[in-house]
Image (cartoon, rainbow, N blue to C red; front, side):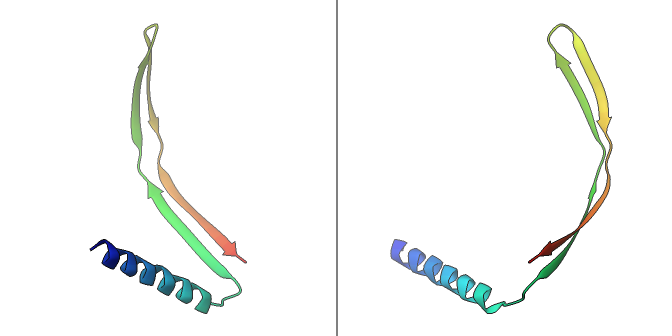
Length: 67
């Protein structure tokens, strides 16, 4: 079973490597986006210091260029 598993992963790695070399694009443009929700924070530290707050969420986007 161990030998079969190693052969499977070896074939998988070799196939992935061959496919990555066959993709000969000189550059790639990546577009990212996500939305972050609000999060409440409650913290108590030594000396009876208490903190209560909210981390504000929002929409985030970006653009990337791989050369």
